[in-house]
Image (cartoon, rainbow, N blue to C red; front, side):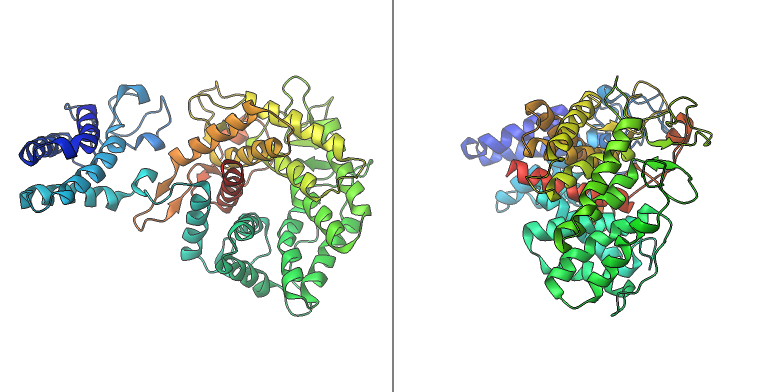
Length: 490
């Protein structure tokens, strides 16, 4: 395949100096060679000895086994790289053929069309969408794809006030703030309005921090639309802080059913709302309350050796996963660390410059960002489901945590807290994400390899969790990362 790739790239540069008959001969030979590399499944082999059907390189986990493959796939062996190369060559060949259509034999143009159309039908690689060139365009593709599938009230779990929808729509709100496309504002507003009535009444869980997160959507709606309903709904969520159970030092239980448990997830689910509420409505005592939650997590859940934080902490030591001395769960789970990083960054967005706790928080974010960068997978740019154990064969690269880490690193750099090493880690992480993106048969965005919702547990608990495509956890985090990377890259 590299003979085709190199020759076509060369032709695209020297065409003006070539005789038309020479160009036709080379293109005819190139298309013939592509036909020899065509597999029965419609993809392309890299070598003349046809490789069996296999996933594209962007979807393959190095060293894994796949049905029909003669042995575990190693990306350097060329078994699955043909599709990636052929996709770009089909586009270039078609362009060259049409550029000289008056002199080109019709069959040559037809053959180029067949290759091009076949690649476009499969849409398995992002490079088949040459119009998507910037992080902001990726954010738009992600939002538009989900909007084409779901009405706002149909976002899963349908017709519920839930943080899954909240995370996705918060990402969409960031996109709206950057581009002011009113389609996104209307979509967010419809989600809220279908659940919150004119008096601010709505159905939500009263016993968990997760129920608060979607309340982040209320502040801008209140500011833009006025009335009383959005403020009334926000007040209901704010007063959960009075009724949620707490540890002996005032840390919120993540849920009532997890007695005396603090989870990293909760800092984002409730803490960012508290700071936004304080900023918009003047309830300044919420700031110290939110910072107290972060300090407790750092005190009891941070591991000094790695700089990472354990997923959960049980003050009572009763959970089966709780270490009898520390109370911590045993692993560093990716997405929980992502929620923590997202919270730290957005806390800094909301805290006044003069607040006494700001410097301590900034130092925490800087240390945490440096720790994340140390555990990035060098080959893919992604991070593992269990962040510090990428060396174990059953561990796997997970996309939602990668999105959140990219966002965290980008924000830490933007705040001036970390240097070029963390910026480069953010760039590698984002590039790694674009390599694994897929498109369905209708050309809609797909983010794969997203861990479904997960409770605290041991190593096996995390690595055996099912994955999904376009889970709102992941797509929302991807949109946030995209918008933030666009702000950095310009």
